Image (cartoon, rainbow, N blue to C red):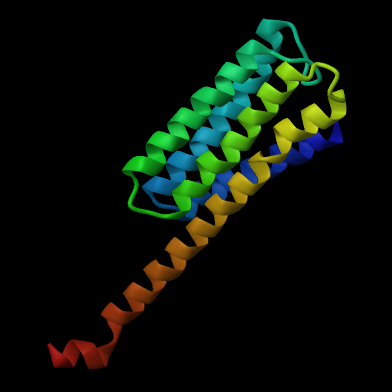
Length: 151
């Protein structure tokens, strides 16, 4: 249960940071993770399953998240968005593996489900940090007196 609290703390921390410092692309990405994270327990309750057993509703939710990330990556001008559907595809393949191999260890399956959200959040945090650094660099260039006098 402690891992659930750690995940919520990390998710909310990343959400606050990206909402404060990010751009439209990073905000969309972290809100996608947040909405999917909120819908996951709801899907488990509705389907009456747990993480250790295969859930068609949870699988559908992860494939919808994959489609959202893929659509985002295809229309984005940023390269970092390509990492998100790649990580999500691994999560989706974990579902298919559990469907094909029902004897797969329950803890391995549940760990495989939750693990890939952390690299997704890391990519989003790094993209936000790069955006902030670029914004500061551009602001500094525009405020440079030597450049202002050259105009």
